Length: 504
Image (cartoon, rainbow, N blue to C red):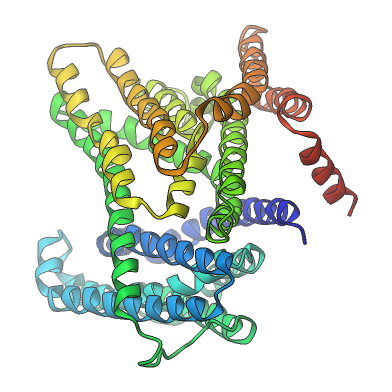
């Protein structure tokens, strides 16, 4: 399969997987809530949430391992591939074991700190330990997921993820009612699903991919490789930590200034909508990032930057098509989803600002992947992601200066736009990026579809209010934006690839 066709297949697989898993998750959550009851469901969310906060560590490790595997794959160095995987697996084993041990020893203190009914403390401790076992298994799964991404086998990952969601529903329906303590049973079921993931990924990888090892030998372990992986993972973790600090810190700033939790409810709803929308562009990023890194590993810097341009262009357009109708019809969307008058008044403002900030970030998102490819992660993390944290003092200063909230929040989007634009000179100096060429191939290329989508959305909001108008706006903007993208943004080779894929 050609790289362009593989990118289309992988992107489509991720869309299908995400849609199915969202539906399964919504249904399973309802089943679990009914089976456990509000009290035990709250305990599981509370106890599991303490461990889930460490999830960004596994994401950072997956990104790091995938980068080094893709780079070695691009160079065609099979020995390097095997050493990178072996050292990554050992690091995941050591780091996962260390974290789980520390948390396990802290169990009495952590559970005692949380507000849990005295009659359920013992069960909560057991659930916490089982959740730690799940966390350890997730650390072991991470290098195998990274290997599949590096190999661009997104279809298998999508199949396993969907099967995981189906099994979760099946387990809840079939087994949860058979045991007296349903909370403990549910924790065990979730842990068994992570064990299933580990087996599914490791067995397939061991059979099909020669670089896979399940027990790294002393010969394969290398201190320089481990140090390189740890350094890259550390700065990747810093980048993710900056984003988390910005998102959660904004909630704290709003709470401290307005002295109520209603404002936090509005902000939380906005983050939920943003999280659901961002997967639209994330799919194309995940599909193209291995090819970007492989091109750099193979010494083809020109091809690497070209793929980074494609990633930025299509990630921006896909997210714009999905979110522009939401931004235009936000009040009606919120009324339909949450009910009229049942959400804080600031919710539409927060939703619009955060979605616009996400759209701005996508304009140069491919350059972030390009920076991962060249490996100069420290300076990039310090420059680009530290800017995101500056959102907090800026918001605090403006709010304490009595600047209206509807003006202050646009500083959030403005800072995100600045961070996106700084990627251009940064990649110019580190990778030789031609800024005029990028502006022509990305900014100019998306201009007509962008104006078309915005014009359709504005027009639809002036035709008169009727039920489910937001669905009509979504369909009309997607159709108009798709046609404008086809005739203006897609090159002749890109159109030929898409037509060939559809024909096959």
